[in-house]
Image (cartoon, rainbow, N blue to C red; front, side, top):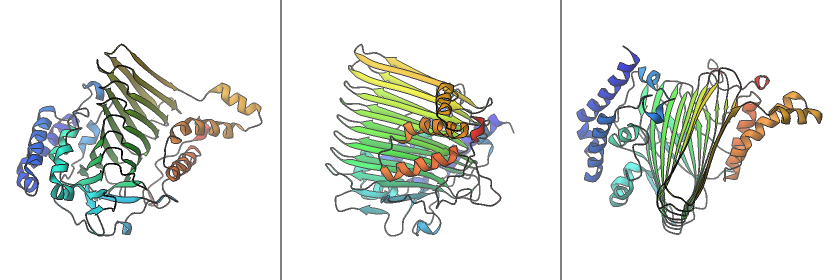
Length: 469
């Protein structure tokens, strides 16, 4: 069977599975969500999976991923147990409220939903749909678009569970909320987690979002996050992707910003076979601010793609994009950053920068910076660089008595640190900086407590050879 027919086969199988099990899906859901599902599966059947003929997927070929015979069963799993018995990922001095998904289902030790004294609600999206139907229906599906091909529609069609966070008006959550998405399966599996986050007016929260694997089986994760930031609210969001080399991770994150709201988003792609991050920022009211940054490290035959869409729909909004990559061996990376300034979005300030280091002649990066401006009073810029270390800077350090190896490490660390230092959660910043530093030295640097790649017969999946630089 050809790769193309594998893709078509999976499209048909997913649609057939949906209709064959529709009663199971709609049994406990609200009517509005069932209508969302029906529309979503119809949209998916119409669009199908994206391919390289689509402009935003021109350099991103998924056909090899489609050759696996995935299990996409969405039957409920046992979810009430102590997750620490199979997984622990700790950061020194980082105290968080933690909620976890295992293979797309929220798992918990006590209750599926936790209600804090300040009114914050966090836990299972399925339980939130049951207990807060009006709140969930008001937001879910409203920010997600077709920006990631048919994947967002497919996720909505199979929506059952996921993670839910609600922060009431004026509440400043005193410690970060950690969202952990774990994949642990013995057979190729298609997983579709959903996350809904609502930050009401003048609220604030910090999010730590972690993606981990506990097995080496080929998996395809199609994750959708919808994050609503109401007037005056602010969110600091750090995403840490630490996946196995047989994984395919597609994450579509949709931010909707209201007046005088703010987001700071950091995407750290430290490991993974195939990773595609789509980030869509809609600034729909004046004086919203968005800072989006990312660091990606890829070696061997790994692939990383970041698509950032900043939509300025209101005046006096500001957006900044900064993405950096270090690419080794036969790895490939893509950065596509689009800034869209609508006619009424006067006094927009929008900036975009992509910088990449290639460590071999075989490593490859494609960049696509885009500006689409319909207003006349704006400040916008974009830039992209692909190259090697600065020889002048290297010479300067050598002339000060620093060895060549140490000089190269210093320059590499400085290159990555510009992104790492944007993380606003200090203990997490220190941990990420430590992980990056170890990798630049060619050392394995996964979380101390994480079991990823700990098997004796599985080699480390990331080993930057500093001598190549």
